Image (cartoon, rainbow, N blue to C red):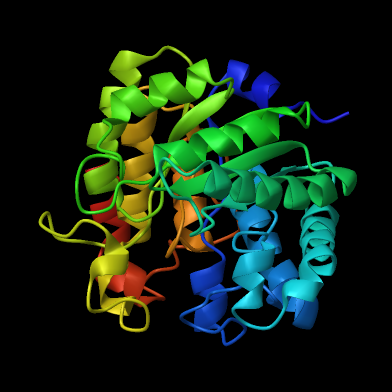
Length: 331
């Protein structure tokens, strides 16, 4: 039997996967703008292949592509009646690829329906979460991830609903261009509130790259002793506009802003050093990023495929320009 997420976290950092919707959009399977996940139904092989890439790169968790798979969000593209089919398909695809190697996380996301001080809106969000969770749990997810909540209040509703499943719960918030939630709460306050509500793992994800996410994560680490999760985007953003979705390049001109695999490996090392337990990534992070993160965390071995270098003269530009020697110098 596979070890659960909490068992794995007791043994050391767990490596998450990367981003799905933006990468599938780049490949032509998702429409930019709504970013809804109907690819799970219309092009399941495309989604399956991306899961395989993350698995082979070293990810220990595969998230079912049910982000934005809620009834109201799907209604914006005329697919509200496909909610059950889509959520079931997404979990099944992730489970098929995960096998006994990876855990599968169910997924909830921001709903765009939350309104502070509105009991009616809160109930609507609860119904939205409960509807998705019932399907995902029935399909056999190992734990629940709720993510990308700018409103702490909505994140707390995700904890409330996810706890009813009896599965481990991970919920992460997102800072936009200010270092606080939409209510004005700090990272430390949010972490305490989420743990107090019953979450097993809390943290931050999306919108910001490691450069602008690790500092508030450090504030969380100082404030709480529980398991922390960090899943930044792999795009470079300026200090004055750290939220990549606020940039004029979003969503179709982000390519020049993508971080290198080396930078993402350095992020993983830094995250481990400051005490982050679940180290993953979000939008813009592809398999090469996850592989470098896996190497930084000691999750995958050094490449040992045969390469006979000493044959009298260089046989590749890598050798000709001394890149191997430079790499050894850096390490």
